[in-house]
Image 1 (cartoon, helix red, strand yellow):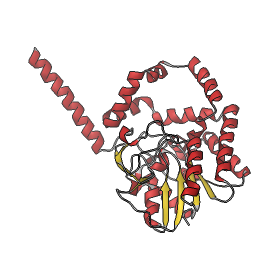
Image 2 (image 1 turned 90 degrees about the horizontal axis):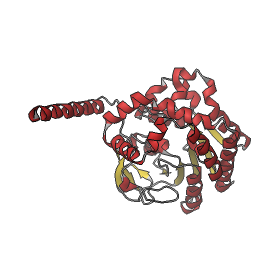
Image 3 (image 1 turned 45 degrees about the horizontal axis):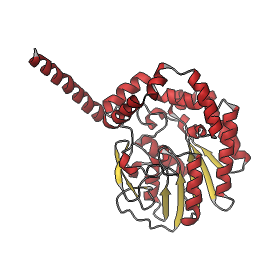
Image 4 (image 1 turned 135 degrees about the horizontal axis):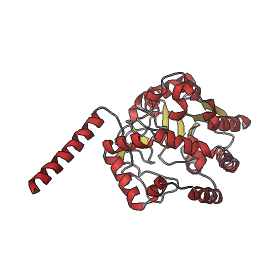
Amino acid sequence: MKKILIYNVCIFFGILFLLEISIRTLNLANLLGIKSDILIKNSNPISYYPNRSSIVFGKKIFTDEYGFRIPKKNFKYEGNKKFLILGDSTSYGVGVVEEKTFIGLIRKKNRDINIYNTSITGHNIDDHILITKKFKDQLDIDKLIIFLNLNDIFFQDTAAKIQNLNKANDKKTLKDKLKDNYFLAKANFFLRSKSALYVYVKSVLTFPSERHFKRTFNFYKNDVNLLNYEKKLDKFIEVVGDNLDLTIIILPWEYQTRNNCLNKDLFLPQDFTANYFKNKKLNYIDFSNDFCKIKAKDMYLKFDPAHLSQDGHTFVESLIIKNNLFK
């Protein structure tokens, strides 16, 4: 009986191992998560340790003396002009090696420009404000480009956050309660950074692209959220000032682009940001329409709501070149 049990256990884990290898080989899912050795705890803004190598979303990454992502260890900036990139995990290029991200591709074609990519997973408007304050003069920046994410609207004043959380708590589902469990959350973070099989099964069962978009979209239907977001953007523009060349870029999420963007109502977030920045007479570029003209699903990581695949980064690079943004 004991031998049979051991035999069955070995078969079970053997099958899991083969499935794990198969999913990784076929690229059916991407590892998630950030190795803790790179993140400076309690930093404000959120920062990575300088001059380090680590693992982010299953890919090896390197940081420069400021903690910004660079292509390789001991990379040297040798350009004359200086561009500061603001953004989060999308412009960081999680799940893709740096040289294949749109920032890395542009970097290789513009050796005369020092591209400081400050983007980090979790960055929001508050982080962008602090980074701009710190580096625009320290690095004597010539141009600032921000890749604004649709979910930047999440970060509101404390009072607004409490108000929304209280409302959300009244409608919490069993799934929400499970996600809030400390031990289950820790197990989830561990497994998604180690097992492509786990990420694949979870994604198939929970539809993350649709789920994350709809959660974000609902924030844009609340006037209080919109007002608070405008205040954050106002503060950011004030910090940038009148003398720094600023460009704002927005990218669509995967769920919006389905069926060649057939459902135009899903673009409420882009309509809001477009109206805001046009009223401010700022250089705002929306790449959403460009994604609507192609087979956009291949432009994103598998089951991912917003992060670009290697093909997606190549496509965004072409749009950046088309719009002469690094000149």
